[in-house]
Image (cartoon, rainbow, N blue to C red; front, side, top):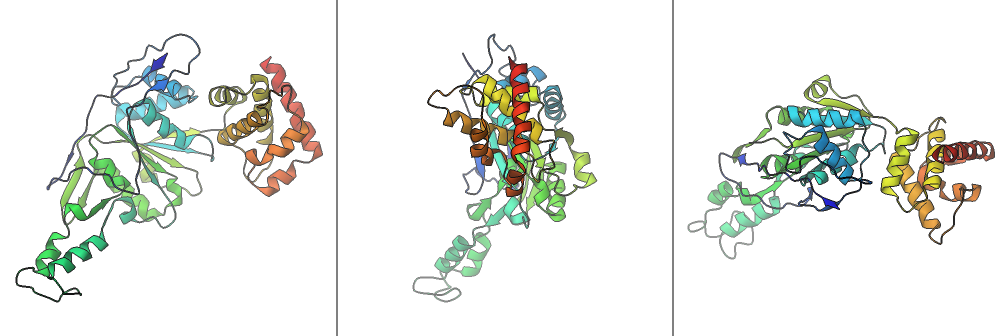
Length: 366
């Protein structure tokens, strides 16, 4: 069985001067439509397949998550549903590897929408997030306007080709380089704007973000104002490396993604690594859950557990079966733990504890 969730609404942006859509480097865009294998086990999903973001029911959202193999509990599904219905940005916080970025990706994939991603980093500027001018192209245009054989800006025949007049025209649409925020406002289709790891950027960028999210518009002084007729779906993620402003939090619906429970993590591995024996998957989840109780520098998230499961499955490609052993754990710990101090913490005593946790989890799975 194959399922799709489709969106039939289209969006337009209004400029004081029209700017045609174009592809710009530096913006990550994932285009629909998609055809997605139904990953549910038995039975047909009955959710509306033509729901728009605005009128998507919680059943539609669950269906989209299921189609994308994303395991989400009631809290996530309900909060996402409310964010879509209320037209508010969704602020998702949690530890690295908890599935925050993946939430935005599956939301876009499940609804056949474009994903526009702005990866935040220290020193991120308004120009990098909104738009820049193609200075090289502008300079070439002004030099060309100076006349043949000029060789330098501001020389040559100025009677037929006036570089000052060219200077006025170089601030035109053809010299504009869109960046993710502007692209999200201008695009004419269903789209999800992912502002990833906003806590890595500084407070100045946060203020800019508030301004854009307030009216979903921005002014380019040389061209005019662009305003999204229908705002994009906005997902903002944070690893909580610093506190975010109260103003930004008030603007959003808040969702905290906690480390998965043992049962939920098993369900995730069943979806993401179906080639791994379910009992071995249960063992890995039991050990990962036990490791999170240790005072680690970087406790493993669901993403690390998935990597670990894939590594174990790859090592067992020749049909090796049975419980995981000490050597397998030792040889694959680098998939789960990413700090040398954390790996060194797994001594013989902790290994015994982990194997006990694995045995308990396997017994519960049986």
